[in-house]
Image (cartoon, rainbow, N blue to C red):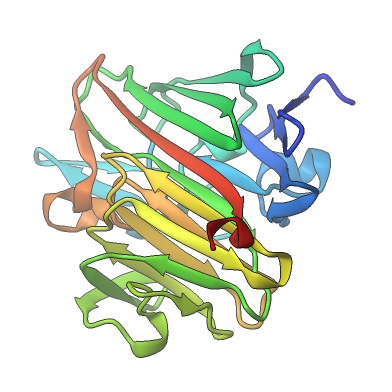
Length: 294
C-alpha cells in the first residue's frame, strides 16, 4: 500500500483515503461499497484511477464567467478542469499533507496561497473519524487573504445506483438547470425529483440544486439490504443531486451554499470571511442493514 493512501476502519467499515485530491478512494460496509469510485479530472484519478468522494473548497460547483464582483471590485479565476467554468475549487486538484493518521482517525491539510488572477488564499483541513459504525468528516476553511472573500464548503461523494436505489431528503426549494450546467430558477419539485417522502433515483440526466435542506438524508439499496444515513450539521443547508443519464452512480453533494453562489443574492449562502476567519462543517455517514431497522 502506498504511503499516499491511508486506511481507516473498524472491521465492518473500511475506508481508503488519498492525499491526492484529499479524496476517498473507497468506502465499504460489511464488504458492500457505499461509495463508488468514479473517474474525474482530479489528481486521485491520475494517480489511482478514480475517486469515490472529494472535498469542495473554498467553494463548490461552477463560477459563471470565471469572475465575480465584491465591494465594487471584479475578481477573476482561471478554468481548472475540462469545464469552461472554474469548477469545484482547488482542494480536489491538490496534494494534501498528512497531519496525523491512526487506525480510526486521520487529518489532512492543504495550504493554498494566492495565484493570480485568483484572490483566494486559505488553509483547508479535513478530519476523519470512525466511531462505532459511523464515519464523520469535518471540513474547514480559513481565509488567509488580506481581502474578505466569499467562501463555502461541500462534499462530492459518488454513490452506487442500482435499480432499487431510493433517496429520502427534505428541502424547501428545487432549482432547475440552464445552459452551461448552471442553476436557472427556483420552483416546484418535479414528481420524480421530489425526495421528501422518499423516491427512486430516476434514470435521466440530473444536475439540480436543492435549497434549505434539513441536513438529513437516507439512501437505501434494497438489493444489498443496506441503507445509509447522511447527516450534515450547519452550515450545510443545501445539496446538489447529479447523475449522467442511465449511470450506475449518482452524487448527493452536501453544500453550504448554492451553485454559482457568487452571482446569486446574498452570495447564495457563501460566507464572506475576513482574514483569519473560518468556516467549519461536519458530515456523518452511518451505514446500517435495512433488516436491522424492522
